[in-house]
Image 1 (spheres, helix red, strand yellow):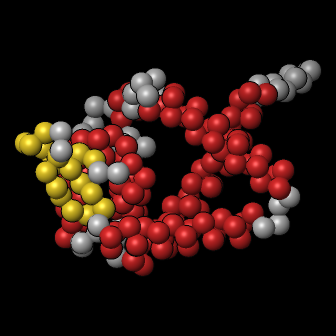
Image 2 (cartoon, helix red, strand yellow; image 1 turned 180 degrees about the horizontal axis):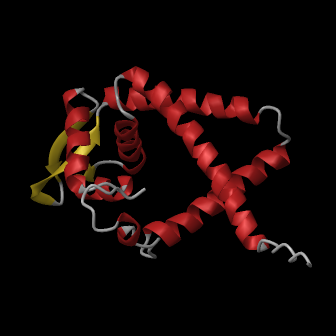
Length: 176
């Protein structure tokens, strides 16, 4: 009896699997790092992302912030409510529409964001310290290109597929 030749995996498929594993590992580590570092300041990671968006983009309406955070408006409102209660964000009349409200970072919110951000950047410096400058630049470029490609493909309208078939009709089933 002759043995069947082993099917060689498609090189693109093999690379995609390796990238998926590497990104999953990196995201997992950063999620825990962010949770552990940011939450010691009595704000959640999502609240910190909202603070960052408001610092970088300036005052925004809740709907615009929801789009940046990729959250629904009601979740964004709860995030903003918490930041307002803590004194890191304030609601002001929107200059373009008297019926609307804009969210703006307070001086305390900006100070908190800058403190958290500087600590996270220092951690990045520790990671990069042993790499040569070309490797650091290449790593940053690759991550930026992958982020832009993922944004264009997965967020800006190209579907990643429906989870409905995997979920089945069982109401207790979860997509995963």
